[in-house]
Image (cartoon, rainbow, N blue to C red):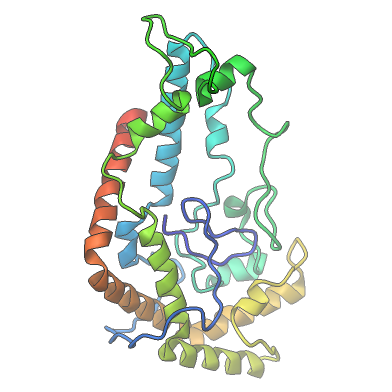
Length: 310
């Protein structure tokens, strides 16, 4: 899923795993693509990116998790068992959905004035802070199945008896979770279903190293210096271990940060460059990306049927 963002209290997640670093020099040198009109981006404006069509959205991810849980539960019940993992557990550790709000760092003046670099409570969750990802929630560490339930969910070990349902059919390979995965996932699986996500990371790195973004970042550094702050990049204040709740110093820094981004139209420039970089990548990798898009569409459709219209 295309969840590239750099925000205190979050781990950037891609299906769910690859973290995004924004370190200069990490992407290959390529010819910089031409830009369209560079617009002034409002803080509340949605920032859609071309590669999102080849990646899984946050909403789609949740739908697939719920579908897998429901199909696993139905299978376990078919074999006379009870699935004790609650549905809430399959999504409780998912990252908050910020869209692309902090893709280019903090940009909302209202949030900066109230929370500094911390995420608003509605986005961060009760145990999230500025210095690391949200902790796993819930007491007791999660699912604690009986041995019989574990077999139904995960499958019988080699050489062990295989349970059968009321009709005498044996437990599917990989148990009920294996059956659920096969029912949800498309059969025509591409070699790399995470290609869209990986290329989004590459495009993000390219955009940060693009000369037009570097020029805007240089202007931001100068603007911050005029306001009494010496930072080499927008990520320095963003990634600091600010104490909670936000102090006056953090809020003042955040407000200056946002004001300077607006003064040099940093987000507008960066967004335009990243869109151009993504379009270039899509043109270069279209056959592979089209296969990924087909796979994702089928998988998402299968999940939607399992959970019903929501």
